[in-house]
Image: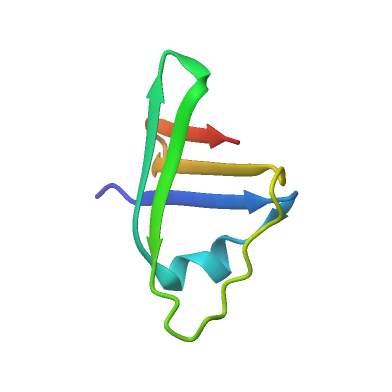
Length: 75
């Protein structure tokens, strides 16, 4: 059975374990060049615990299947 893989790094810190319990949906869209890629996610932050990074903070997301194809976002 295949197992999903998700890793979220913000400003060099792996925040996956804090991000995952709040995650409702996530998509990565690529279109030709890195300049046209985007990541969209929906979080359940009813307790207002999410601290958003400052503008310009590097974000890296890996999404896919362990041992298989992986989509990545760098922004």
